Each structure stands twice: as C-alpha cells, then as structure tokens.
Image (cartoon, rainbow, N blue to C red; front, side):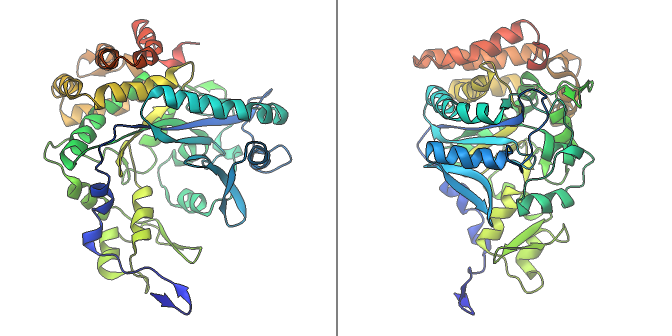
Length: 420
C-alpha cells in the first residue's frame, strides 16, 4: 500500500497482537544479556557528555573505526553501534548498553563481553573515560546530564510523570537477562516465577546507595527511581495468577496509555491521551494503527519482567566483580530446570501478591536486610542462589562457578553496595 509514493503499512488487526509472543516459542534454551554502564571522566567521576571532542559520540566514532562496527543513527546523530547481532547503544544519559546475541552458556557471554571490553580499552584510555559498574551515577545528577539527541528520549522525558523519572532516565544503569520459552504454558510459568523472584534478586544486586556524592539512605536508589517513574507502565505486569496467558498480557498493553507514534521519521505525540485499545478502535487524527505502532508501544512498557519473544528480566542494578555473570547464571540455573522451577515455586508461593509488591519498596531501602512479613529475606536469597548452583553443577559445564561471588557475598550477609 502506498500514498503519494510513500509506502505505508496495512492497518493492524487484533488477530496480529499475539503474534510476537506465539512466534517466540522455540526449542532453544539460551541466555541474553544487556549490560549498562555509566561513562565517567577517569579522574573526576563526572558523567561524560555526548558532545565535545572527548565526548561519548566521538568515542563511538573512534571505536567504530578501530573495531569495524557500524553506526546506529537517529536522523544524522550517532546513537549506537552494531556488529552482526551485538549492539552498543546509548541510554538517555549516555549510559553504555552492551546488548549481546543470546548464547547457550554464560561462558560465551563472559567471553564476548571481555572481547568487546578489550577492544574498547585503548579508546577509553585515550578519551580518559571509565565505565562504572554502579546502578546510579555517584556524583553527577540529572540536572547536569543532558539527554542524548535521540527523539524518542526527549518525548519520553516530557511524558513520564513520576517524581524520579529524570533520575531513572539519565542517572541509572542496570543489567537485564533474556530467557527463552518453549510454549505459552512454559512462558507464563517462567514469567510468573521471574516476577515473584524479582524483589529478591533486586536486593541481591543493590548497588546504588551513593548519589550526588552522598549516601541516599537507600541500598538501591535505582530501584527507588523505577518505583517513581510511571505506575501505569512500570512495576509488575501480573497479579501472579497461575492461569495468566499471552492474551492477558496483551490486554494489559491495550489498556496502557500511549506516548507517541512515528510517521515518516516524525514523532506524533499522543501524550497519554488514549490507550492502545482506543487507538485500535478509532485511530487518532486520521492515523490508523500499524504493526510498527504496536511494537513501539510494547517497547515503551517497562515492567520489572517484560514479555517479548523471550522473557526479559529487568530490575537489577549494574554490578561488577564477577556479579555481572552471577545474574544470568542464577536465571539459567532456575529457569531451564523443571526441578529448580518447582523448588522456587514452592519456596515463594507461601507469600501473597501484596507481600511481594510491598517487598519491592522495602528492598530499595534495605536490600537483603529487608523483611517479607516478619521474616528476613536474606535466607530466601541464599536458597535461590543455592538452587541455581546445584542445577548448574549437575549440568557439568562449570557454570556454577559464576554464582560463587554471589553466594559468598550472601554468606557475609551483604549486598554489592556494602562490599566497599
């Protein structure tokens, strides 16, 4: 279909909304990793700006030349790099996000991260930049961090209404893990359990207590920022119902307000004036819904665990010291083992949905020292790590070693920001 020589998409039909999730069913059991870090000046720990002779844009340009990466552009602006199935993209405040092609083992993920870091090292040294493994910028706050020139980010910054949405966008960095599923039943079981696990794993990864040079009183200020970003599109995308299906998730998305759509490289700002269901039924100012609109809308939905053609588990502070590999190892050990899934379900089913939701607030402040009801969560965190450890050990591939930094830290009764 075309209009005045411009190719346009067909109108989206309700029957298409489930397609991405149904087509996501696969036989593989891979692990995906998205790894964000904060670029700061080597000597002052100030966040490095996008512009300038030694800014992040020029760093990307030099790295692309040196290691044969292609540009990712927004208009004429460089907003990232790609090489085969791996990307380096910039989050709103210049945070580096390394997104890797899913791998079968954590060994492969680690090897690829280290390979890219080795190639980056001389460019970072030339620019006197270091990449911090922290969940929030320790010195520079959002008032002194300009958004990169990506149109989507500027629209989002104007829309997101939470009191800490600017902190989330410009200051924070996290780690996300992708998990495959074989069927709708498999997907929704893993989705439910990943949501139940999420506050506990957020606690294990809490690494953002220092912000603006001071102790915030929170172990994970990043988790607090997400709690205060946009309650209509953040948090839990589930009521922990065992009968939840793909259609239920789609219905949540249909009832979520829209931020914007794209037409011919221009942003059409809806600013929350209608839900996607209303857009499906009535259109907007002559625009009809398309598949691209739906995909954009699903990507502008930010729950702690997001359903895509894989399960994206999101709410972990950026960590280092080997813990960055403990996170994918933890999920691999649990999500790809029937017995481990059953153990985790038995462990966490004793808690109500309200207790899990309340815990999300408590771990932002107290991390592994938080309580669920009257009980400390530290022992539950230890049990989750041990379940994953023994599953991985049984597989015989040595991936249980990646859990040792996490297990040893939990034995000390600490979270990353307390390790000093």
